[in-house]
Amino acid sequence: MVDAVEEPAQNGVYKKRPFMCSLLDPNAWFKPERLHPRVESLIYWRDVKKSGIVFGAGLVTLLAISCFSVISVFAYLSLLLLAGTIAFRIYKSVMQAIQKTSDGHPFKEYLDIDLTLSQEKIQNIAGVAVAHINGFTAELRRLFLVEDLVDSIKFGVILWVMTYIGAWFNGMTLVILAFVSLFTLPKVYENNKQSIDTYLDLARSKVAEVTEKIKAAIPIGNKKPIADETDKDK
Image 1 (cartoon, one colour):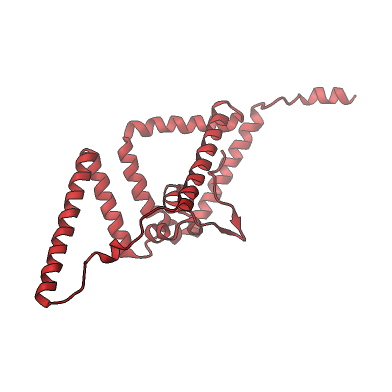
Image 2 (cartoon, helix red, strand yellow):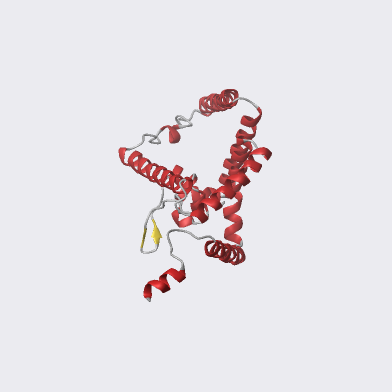
């Protein structure tokens, strides 16, 4: 099958992707040079405290969504966050009045952060999204219309396996598993890269060998029998 669309490398270095694009592309999880620096720092646990907070908060949120409605989870979490910020704001104001200091607003650092999206960022994200959608659509057309018989058969096997996955897990469970994998598999791969690559190369060679045998056994295209080509030469 065709690989996912990726930014071209210049001098062996891939262009850094936008935050959400690099986060949602599993193919880039195992290639730090293709990730947005903040995504790389999070999923590779460069800052254990920060990654732990994001992982814990995200996992709790997903588990809550799987048990309650999205609206309820959003409302309760927002209320909890708002109560915390109001309490902290009041506490800092009281402490400033007692100590007679002028530290200012406790959240001034975060209030000064520019959250506006520039036109360049939007165009960049939209361009990557459109490239992925176009590649995905073209690949589905190729597979369903059997441009390559072997690839379509492999796609059918994947769909058959997905029917069992769908019977075992619901969509929210798969999202939770994907989130946990995002924060575990890249780091495991980084720590055991050599041994994992050895086994992956072995698996790829076996799959390629089986694929070649299938292609040799199934007549694909409009190839003429060898006997006919021999008669033609005569």
